[in-house]
Image (cartoon, rainbow, N blue to C red; front, side, top):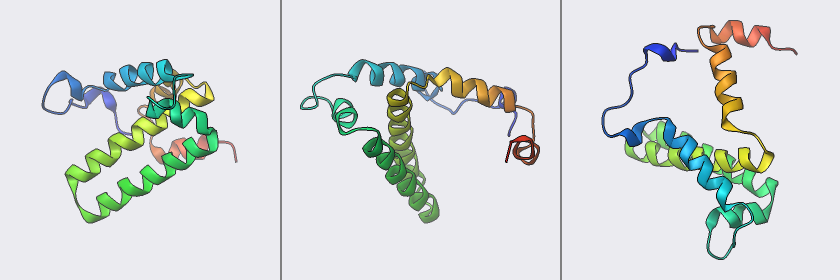
Length: 121
């Protein structure tokens, strides 16, 4: 895994910061139990985990297709959709993003090959 300590944030405003994911997660949590008629997020929750997971898969495929096409703007848009749906899936499962960030931090500075070897079969 790349060393995130030396990574530079993307050019532009503060909205490019990874903190936007934490803000989005808070919004996603706030929509839990909301009115499915007025909130897409609440509608996803009302349809259940399988539907949320299906949407994550669909968005992942769309992102892949845009990457293969070489359409950077479309890839950015589909990536945003993928991250949003992934956050909904995490919230539905009761997984706090901090748990994922911790996993990433634990892997920081470790080669992907070594990290995979260390996993239990």
